[in-house]
Structures are given as structure tokens and as C-alpha cells.
Image (cartoon, rainbow, N blue to C red):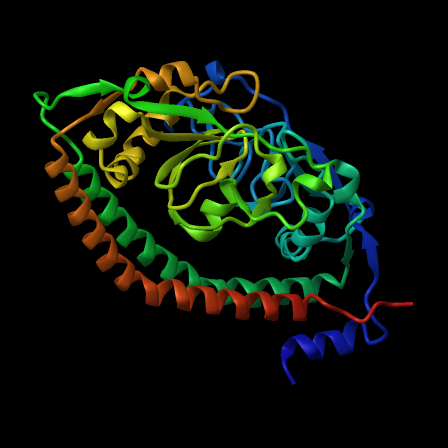
Length: 391
């Protein structure tokens, strides 16, 4: 019999108490900072990460308002996502921080594992609109077990060991991705004598939109791909279909054409993808495709590869003050886009396509193993966090 089973039989043979999260923790919303208060880079003075819509800092600040080892629930944008932050940080108003109450014996790391298993439930509580949100009450209503501290410690030790190997695999994968990005950027760095054209002169640049969710006629049995950031996160950079679809009655004007580039320009900034079919997007994404005058001068796949550089520029110039980060489309239209001869573009595309295929072949084994390990981990995590409820 494992040590965990021995502890359960010894300390709680009749079951474990379950409580609503609000009884065991304080759900604390953060405080907004403006762009002018932050440093984009970590420095000696500005060394505290500012957490906004995920676990990646939106910038750095001079002090923390949350302690190390805190569970975070995002309440705006990627609402319902759960993270654990191991160092002190500044919590913006786009996330809730969970602090165990002194009256309850609850380890911070055990709390994280419990709430992480409830992400699907939290996602089901999202209020749709221009920006998905979730309120504190939905978080407080989540039910979690409260086993004795000895059992919590044992579970934390087991799950942390389980994830160590996954971390090593992820590090190796990220190293390969960084190598590819380095060579892609070098290949797309042109001499000053290469002609350039303003992005708005050579391309149509338009944002997407969200058809009314309250009108089923726009959504039921939809066949037209409607792309969001979730599609890029879940399915990669070259996409021929989306997670959600709309009907022809939801279309305003014309669809965006196949072989267009999309670029996230609100909330999550600067993430590109290449769409191979006619489509629509939501309003957080900007669509880019050549104007008729330039169709025979531009390789669409070249635009896609170069859009990674445009995306990095967008992250620098995006307006983060007073709300969600957003790219000024007027500024985007003034971006100087390089226009080497079509033959040069095609040659670059060929090199990058081959390089991408080689990297994908090298990486395929790792992501498959990581995914398999992640599935095993989630199954095991959910199993050991499920107790007989004490009556």
C-alpha cells in the first residue's frame, strides 16, 4: 500500500470534508497599473513581474502586491485559466489571487492543484461579450477537498515530482523553437537598399467582428471558419479550419480571402497565423492581404513569415495604458514592409518551409511525448485529488 493510501486510511478513514472555495480562501482582485508605470524589461529597480491576462508578465514594477506561491485565476480575456506564481508579483485587475484563510489549514501548492482541476468548470462560468469575463462568485462556488495537512503535503510532493520530467522536455522543445526563430529572423533581415512600401499601401488591413451570440441563426450549423486566439494556441500557425463556425447570414460584406495573414492586435499582441481558406475572425484579430496592385509582387507565405517580425514590433508600440493592450491600426499601416523581388521572396519561403518541416519532424516526437505525459499527469492528478466525501 502506498504511503498516500496509508495516510488516508489513518487520518481520514471516513472521508474528507469538501467546502466551497469561498469558505477556505479569500478571492482578491488585483489593481490596474498604467503602461507609464511599468518597465518593459526587468531591471534592478523594476524587478517585480506584473501579471495581467496569463502567467507571462505584461511588464515589471517596483513592488509586489501578492506573495510568492499564490494561485491565480484569470478573470478577463483568457478567463478561467488557472496558474501558480512561485515568486512575489503585482496582480492587475484582470486576475484573482487566492489566499487561504488562517482558519483553514490549506497549503498554497495543494490549493493550486485542486483549482487547476476545475478549469473546465470555471470556463463554463464565463460571461460572453466583447471581452470574456468571470466574476469572483463563480470562483468562490468551486468545491474543493480539505484533507489533513499531512495528506496535502504528500500529494504536492507526488505531483511536483511527476512534472519534473515534463519540465525538462519542455525546455528542450523551447530550445529548438528558439533556434528556428533565430535563423528565420536572420533570413528576413534585409539590407537598407531593399525597396520598402507602407503596409497600408500594399495591403488591406481590417479587423474582424463577433456576430451576436444571442442570435442562433448566426451560429447554429455554421460552416464558415471564425478564428480567435484560441485557434492559434490550440492548432498552430497554418490553419485551414477553426474551432467555431458561423453561418452565411452572420457575414457582413465579404469573407476575408484565403491565404491571408491574421495578427492578434488586442489583449494578446503580435501573434500571427496563415489562413488557407476564406474565413472570418473576431475583433481582437487584424487580417492582412495584398491589394490588387501588389498581388503579383507579393508571395502570401512571405508575408506570413515576415509577420513574426511585425508582431514583435506591435508588442513594442501597443498601447497598454488604462486597459487592455491594443495596436493602433493607423500606426500599423505606416509600417515599412520590405519588398524584395518576387523570386527572392519565393526562395526565402522555400528555405523557411523546408527548415520548418525539418524542425517539425525533430519536434514531433517531443510534443507527442509531452502530450501523452500531460494526459497521464492530469488523469493521475484528478484521481489522487478525488476523495470520498465525509458525511
